[in-house]
Length: 238
Image 1 (cartoon, rainbow, N blue to C red):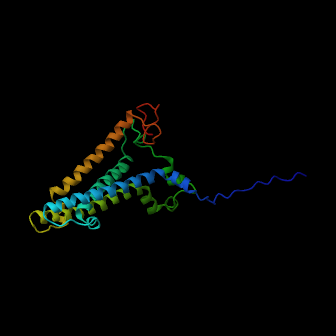
Image 2: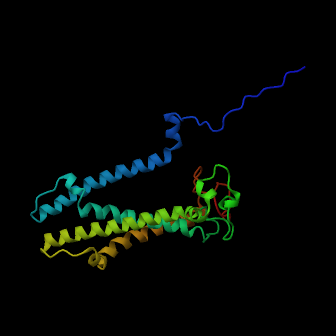
Image 3: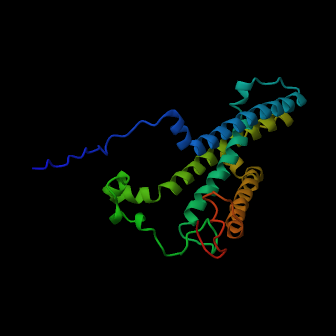
């Protein structure tokens, strides 16, 4: 009598720990982006420190240490007015691309009323994120979590820009004329604050608009932000 064939069952629950080399490869894009961010943030702080001390010297004030500079309104305003515009742009972009299309662009979904099958909880998989299985409020929040997170980061950056800008405005007023400080609410109503915001907001939306339109006609081989090289111009989506 022939013996039954015994097959070894592999456990699907056991996950292999990736090697450092594999981990670096799997996270190379995020590591590169955040590495560049930290590099340029440090360089910004160094050059900002030098610039700020030059301004203080012109007004007859003593230069500040580097660590002291990192807590000033000059540094906070410069950092957060840029973060504010970036998060606004990305949050608005994620939200708007859910409802609006651009024919032929790789940045647009193909049809205005077409939802992907995997966007519906009824098509959940066993390893789908937990809010999909819980449903209710958790699922509603999760379905919109990316745009909500980006817009929350925008709101936080907006407030920090306002506070840093107020501190810097008051410092400049003290150095130039010895004027009394104003509140954040008062600074919010100045043209200076909104000038700082608008000069960044307009550039961010220009850059995204340019990407949307240029991706209709131009290609970048290997990039998920581009349509394949042979794809016709009118074909929408990557």
